[in-house]
Amino acid sequence: MRILGYKVSVTAQIGIAVIILNVLVALFAPLIAPFDQATPVGDAWADPDAQHWLGLDNLGRDILSRLIYGARMSIGLALVITALSFCIGIISGFAAAVAGGWIDQVLSRLVDLLLSMPTLIFAFVILSVLGSALPVLIITIAILDSTKVFRLARSVAMNIVSLEFVEAARLRGEGWWWIVTREVLPNAIPPLTAEFGLRFCFTFLFIAALSFLGLGVQPPAADWGSMVKDYRDMINFGSAAPLYPAAAIAILTIGVNFVVDWMLSIHSRGQGEGA
Image: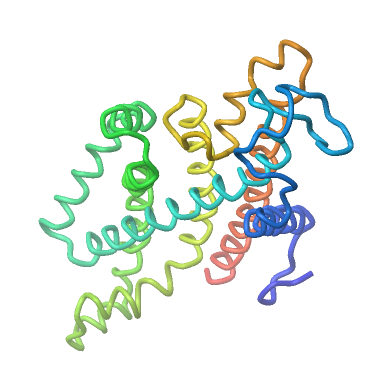
C-alpha cells in the first residue's frame, strides 16, 4: 500500500484503519446506534443480552449506544479544538518568526507565561470559574494547546526565513503575508502535519481527563471520558462497563500514533535525502 508515492508500513495501515473506523462511527452514530444516548431502556446495570450487547448503565441507558455517540463527541470535540489551536499557534508563530523584533518578544513572553502554569490546573481553574459549556471548553483548551503549536511553528519558520529564497523574496519587496503563505507555509507543512496528529492525541486525552474530573462534556451527552467516570465503581463488582470507553480511548490514541510515527519517519527520510 502506497500513499503519495510512499510505502505505508503495516502499523500505519492498522492506524489508518482504526482512524477510518472511528470517523465512520462518529459520522453515522444516529444510524448505527440501536438506541438514543440519553434514553433509559431498561433496568440499571442490566447484564448484556441479545438486545443490549454491552448491557445497560447506571441509569438504564444502552452502553453500546452511548459508546457510539461518545465517539462523535470525543473525536469531534478534539478535532475542532486541535484545528483551532493550530490556527492560533501557526499564525502567531509565523508572525513572530517573520516580523521579529518587539512582536516576537511580546508573543514569546506571553507563551512563556502560559507554559509556566500547569495546563491541567490552569484549565481546571478557568472551567471552574466560567463553567464547562462547550464554547468555553473549546476556547480554553485551544488557547492552552496553541502555546505548544506556537513554539514549533516559530522554530520551523525561523529556520525557513533564514534561507536564501526567503531573503530573495524580501529583496523583491514581498510583504510578510506573501512570505508566510508562499514561502514559509509550504515548507513547514510536513512537521506541522505530524504535530497535528500528536496534538490531537493530547487534546483527546486531555478532554477525557477533564470529563473524568467532571469539568468536560456534561450529561446527558456521552463522551468516553465521562463514561469512564460514571462506570468506574462497577469494576469492583466485576463489571466490564468502564473498560469499554477506556479501551476506545486507548485504541484510537494508538492508531493515531501509528500514523504519526510513519509520517515522522517519512519526514526524517526526506530530510536525510535532502542533506
